[in-house]
Length: 494
Ligand SMILES: [Zn+2]
Image (cartoon, rainbow, N blue to C red; front, side, top):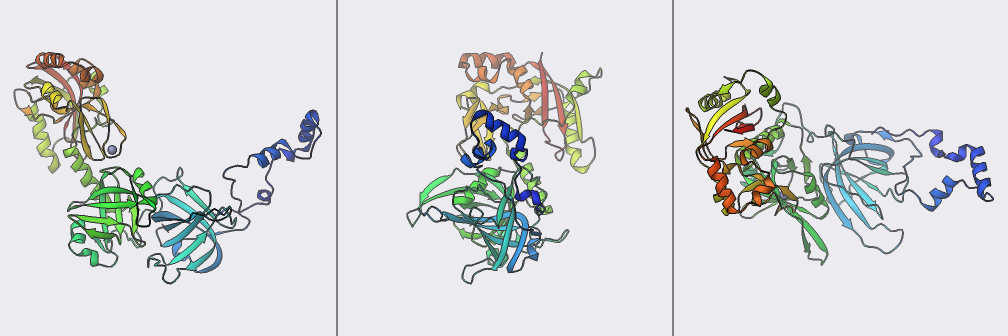
């Protein structure tokens, strides 16, 4: 956000009153004019909730490392890496109701921002991109435990002091700004970075220890009453890397961050975490902990890929990959490229060495050797999906996730189609990813009809499918491309 250079017009907000002839004629037609225009009355009676901030001075746009204690009008931008709310209930009409203590970090440094508030609800979370305008930077007070990596403080109260301002960039943030860790140098290892296992095995003693973890699952928000008798909230986030698993506890204001994270996808760089070892390591935020959300470093990219491979292998019902294969072209082509299961097996084995095609679309003729519709129905596992990294099974098309309470759409369990064979090989049960079209053609009914079928109808469906020939229109891609599993787009049951 560039500093706003106020023009002379900015001190005189433009209204329709700048056209006096119109204003006079409109008021004279109704009742004797009181000298105010309709727009002015409207503004006085219904003041805008967030009046635009019009700085009365110029602010120098600086990087955080350039900040020095003292009076100077500056503006800087960065991401929230630590967040703490100190509510101070007060009945005085003009008093601050509390203070949000934030650590804001750009690529050069970090600073503590005390954001006082009375009525404005600031919906803040870790990783959020913000801008601050302030007339003064201070040294951290002695004994205030200002983290060594964010030694300076600025204290702002935008609702009361028009000389400072705080802005959240939610819609204009494309995720590319200020997402490198502090003191990160390209192609150099990040100082203090260790695995979760090394951290647990004594690495926590290292000054400035850092761990890079992926979110495994997100727990529900739980309410407590703390030792002071005040209400408190906690969200437990399960985290992992390639060496171990742990828990990250978010408390109170920082719990809002979890809603912006996704299981197996969000990567967190946690610097100087608080911790206690239970059965497994538990991490929490201290006043000097930094959390970089999805940092732009190769290690984070690697961990994200690791998490993708893991979920792909373990996901009970991966979604059908969209936009990876050109099925329309394959199906409209006069040439039908027919494959055998042995061909695909060979491609799958040679792909990691870089031999063979990386991606292809074709036809397969297979025989249904086994179906498991009724057995999965009886186990209440006819349909499934995952949420928060946890498999969910049910005999319904949607259900609530037990972790996050959000509704989850369920698709047919791939395991209800058992082994398929052709003259050269077989598929293992549950190893296909079927599109909605493929499911509809195999089952001959909608998912809603399937889950409401009586068991006798399901038995008949099983009998109808068993030992039938099916033609599959499928796509296959090497692991890196997408899935490494057969993706069945369309099925004709012969
Ligand atoms: Zn969930």
